Image 1 (cartoon, rainbow, N blue to C red):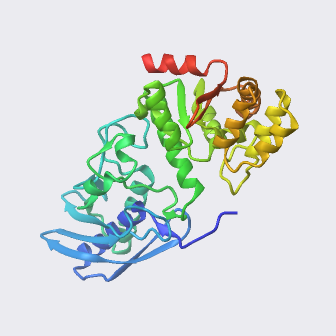
Image 2 (cartoon, rainbow, N blue to C red):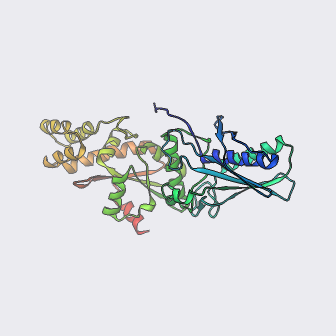
Image 3 (tube, rainbow, N blue to C red):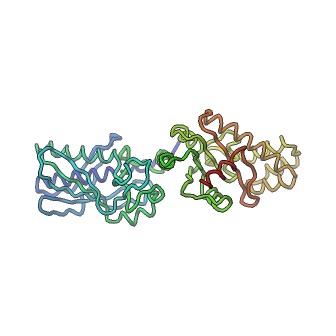
Length: 371
């Protein structure tokens, strides 16, 4: 069970709160010190109002992002809303983006290419919050709500936005309005976004690696363009599930033996707190490939798979052992994908290079590199 920490609130919640406060101050002429909005998760977000400014028929204010215990780079950032009256009396809430809000430049995201990265749920939250105030004060005026983040462009360079094709600033996001610290849900949402974007650009093969070792190996050994690869952390099983749901034909997984050896035992969350069995699985494959009891003892006494793989090599059964490992990986990944995605795999060592590949892995990767 994941350890829970302090809940935070999304940039979407902040934007909605700032918009609500600015709307009320515009209608009443009075300043507010605090505001609250209802999040889609059912939790009320209560926050202070900062940086109030007034112009003719316009009020701006800010809400400071509170990410709780989540290590979010936007934590503490001021999210601004400026609300201005429009001439019409039909109750329109027109949402626009200003400084520090990114623009979508690649397909596959929540908003179309060319639109500001203010996602659909935050847009709805902003609209609902503003209309709540309008109804409370019996007003039918239309308003323009501009969301802006003065630090957004600088902060965006430390987020996934450049990789996702969101340029010039941060995103106003959130599906529940709240942030669960270090949540699996947030990580999987990022993986889904990247896979979805690649699919929208026409990709039929998802190239995936758990982390930086795999990414570096992809680039240095195969010359692969890392802008096309997706990092899945320890969530290999969920990533296969996402590839299935998004309609990919193929998935190529590349990673260090210390992570991917676990797949040969049907372990799809490769975090050490979930399961280990690295040495046991390698030892089983070695014994099945002709290794003797002395080799078995050597492997089981190792603390890492680099050392254990070296013992297998010294025994002269490296090829047979990793053929067995890859056979087992193919079995379990195929079962997870239910035959709907062709999953191929490359396993490597930092000291010995490629240790094993499934039948079509390198062929698929070469084809992708030449596209």
